[in-house]
Image (cartoon, rainbow, N blue to C red; front, side):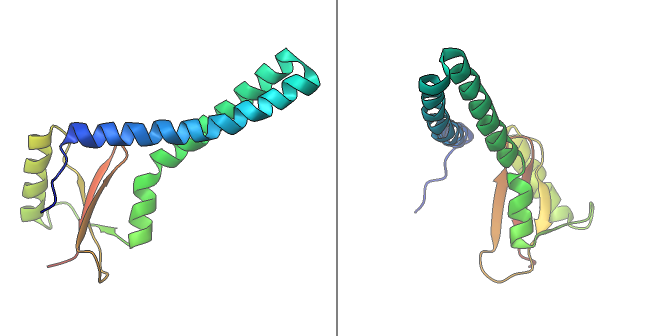
Length: 132
């Protein structure tokens, strides 16, 4: 049987993944800045590091913010109209209240394969399922 992680474990894992992604881009920025220091001096190296590091941080944060939309597009999920699935909406409301988050948006996936998934980017949460 698979253990379901609690919200704190999930957030901790997500935070570690984001920090690792940020660090993975900052190492090449540091290498590039070191080369610029050798060629152009200390100030030029510092500017190069700040520019390259800042650009990488911006790219990672933008990719994280659009993750839910990319998952929904990739799966072909479509939103469920408010009030058209009261049992699902009630279930999601209860899950949201018990976990301390806002009610996730409900989507339906008309594809064979996995029958449900949940996704979040920290600001927005979605749950998608195949129609019953």
